[in-house]
Amino acid sequence: MRTPTCLLGGAGITDRVAHGHDPDRFVEIGSLTKVLTGTVLARLAAEGGVGFDTPLEECLDDVPGGTGITLRHLAEHTSGLPRLPAGPTGPPDDPYAGFTETALRESLRGLDRTAAGRLGEVEYSNFGYAVLGHALTSVTGRSYQQLVDAYVLLPLGLEAGAATAYPPEDRRLVPRGPFGRARPLWTLTGPILPAGGLWSTCRTLARIVVALLVERRLGDPAPSWQRGPSIRWHNGATRGSSVLAAAYDDGRWILLHRLGDPARTDSLAKRVLLATVPRQDGGSAGSPTG
Image (cartoon, rainbow, N blue to C red; front, side, top):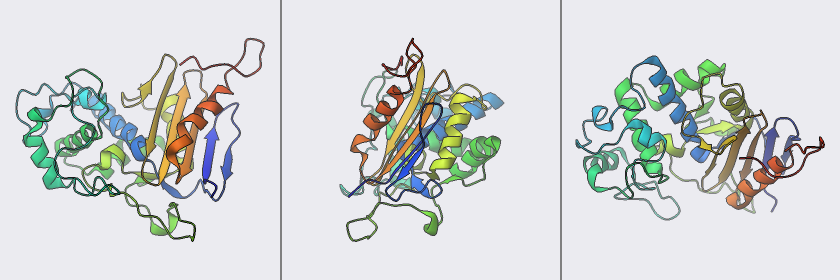
């Protein structure tokens, strides 16, 4: 079965929608959600309220004192927290199903005992982003959706809910089995939402990538983006979707989403980006500088 694929990009990239994909239907964006969470933090910091260096314990009463964790640590994956939440989880085919609000609060009370690495060292953490999202909603008194709408979507000229955990059922694009039946998805609407639970359309995602990374319409990109010397990028994968967004400092950008087969998305996006790198003789070939 061929993989539904949507490829959108800037100069040097030919847009391609194939095998039943639809750039105007909502798809899971997985960990690309993190860049929206990080952008909310950056915008709040620019307002002069909660900031990157705000201690986590000042945001959440459940967090014990003395952890040293700041919101910047959470945003940059340097908090030392483990990749996955501690405590009860769901079954192998739905790993976040057991990560409830109660489980989150219990984890926060023992946060000083759950470190997987040293403070300041990079340890990619979905759990850390769940904690960051909870901190932002607690400090502001707003829901996660309200924060994304107010600090990311509306300032970029997009509609509220253009990225959401609850897209209309009739506008969802989901993986299907050989006989057309929708395959089960992970439960990502609880506390894990700020780490990977949003849905959006590929056209909306493309506008977000260009606005945040190319046009820099909301200022410097949030520290949630992975960085190289001349490129920023982030990927995401769920049980049924995979996506990669990236932009070079010279303005070249790409968004690639694939449905149902996450294994090759990163390598395919890299191959497309490689083909856009200008040669010294004016052609396109070679390796990216980032």
